[in-house]
Image (cartoon, rainbow, N blue to C red; front, top):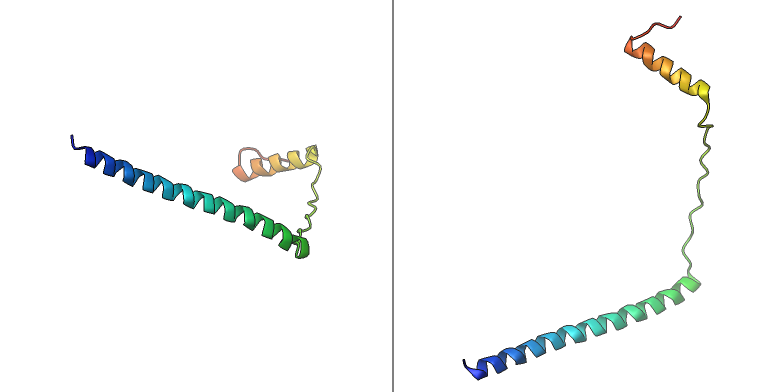
Length: 83
């Protein structure tokens, strides 16, 4: 086996891994600085918080509405005539 090919492969591997390491380090530093800048910007220009819409809910335990819905469904399907 040729030793120079192994040395060249290791050299290329070190260059590739070094490039990735440097890129990731720079990316993490930029993201950290971006977070700091956004905190400063949000201090002076805060986002508007949308108001929550209040949903009026009917009483879910109302038996009259359930009975009416069942009666309407039975009449619509023609299974039973309600007098």
